[in-house]
Image 1 (cartoon, rainbow, N blue to C red):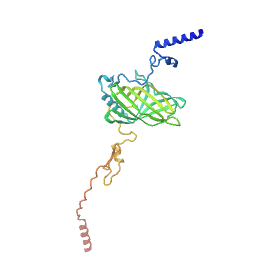
Image 2 (image 1 turned 120 degrees about the horizontal axis):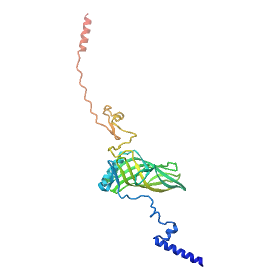
Image 3 (image 1 turned 90 degrees about the vertical axis):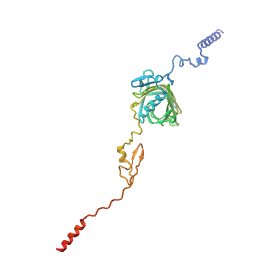
Image 4 (image 1 turned 120 degrees about the vertical axis):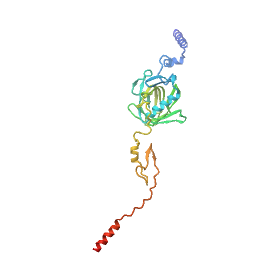
Length: 306
């Protein structure tokens, strides 16, 4: 009888303590004491209070002296200067913007096997301005690995847009990776930008990576994208550097047009063949008569007379 009373009293004390702390009995029984939301917050995708932009070796919050259009145009120029280039990705500190690891990672499960997924670089394949000049369409190829394996992934069709001076987002609709023998795994990335360095080509922000399919999982944190080229000077890459087209070799390799010389046969500019109109050759002028035949006949007559 005494044991039953003591158990009841202990339960009452637990309920009073839980109600006094503002937590439910369900949280206590499930082991969730609210530490993840209160005392120990987990770094994840968050909206920045202000985007910091560095230019001319000076950094300042964008909301003080910049507009949404300026940030959008600066990012467009930065990505156009790095078109067809490979940018490095690293885990960084949100306060100092210094790389801590040369990759970002996320815990996943491949089937029933626990693993870690890594992304250390991204290849910028194409940069296109969207309709209405409100977004930038990007084709990105992420270098994704897990447990020392490199799955086959399709390019990620991503968009970069600036809703306002404090909201710049890079996200994609998901791209597939062949991480298991059966089925495709869909990977989705979201990158909330809060730091733009136009002098050195750095972009920082909070990221969120999620996987769905035979391999699932994900992670969040803060990362930096280190682009090889800066924003200055304006030098967009309009063609693929693997097959450059210059005026020197375009005339040599241009197809020949009938009735025209090699110099006027047309040349290639950005993959488009330009064929000038060939001028018609004028009729040749009649050759003037020479006195050589007359002299020849006179010499023959003199020889006959002799």
